[in-house]
Amino acid sequence: MSLRSGIAARARRIRVVLFDVDGTLTDGGLFYGPGGVEWKRFHAQDGYGIRLAQESGLEVGIVSGRVAEAVTVRARQLGIRECHQGIEDKLALLGDLQRTYRVEAEGLPFMGDDLFDLPLLRSVGLSAAPADARAEVRRAVSVVTRAPGGAGAAREFLDLILRHRSGGVRSAGRRRENRTEGSV
Image 1 (cartoon, rainbow, N blue to C red):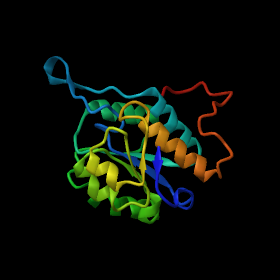
Image 2 (cartoon, helix red, strand yellow):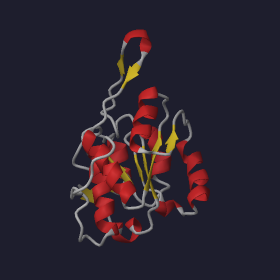
Image 3 (cartoon, rainbow, N blue to C red):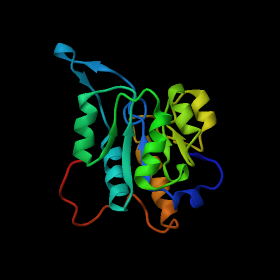
């Protein structure tokens, strides 16, 4: 993971972590079934990372330009309350989230992978992109993960945030003994 300056100080101010969907939480492929139903493949490691972030007190949100029932289902499975789909201007949503969570842009990191994510990526305090994001996006962000989109990139970003929020002592990936409810 490539890292640019000041992540520890920024990580402590984070309240909500935002993710694009296609190319970030998925590999970006679009699959259509009978009747035009859209299917998406999500990675279980990303789901578990989202659960760990929520357990540490962070909110996790989705900001997608597309609308897909699969995203709604996945958000519900993971207890993601901030699920915004069909958002043409992702930057416009930033102000609403800042007011809702009473936090500056530094407290709302975002991970995206394509050119339409750039305005939001450039406006938050901590930005990230998967390894296979567009080159222009990789150059613009604070963090580029080793994992590609849909293959653990979100988990890698969340682990980094959790590690820095806790002072690097606790591993974000440590499994809890009594964890049995809910799927990831």
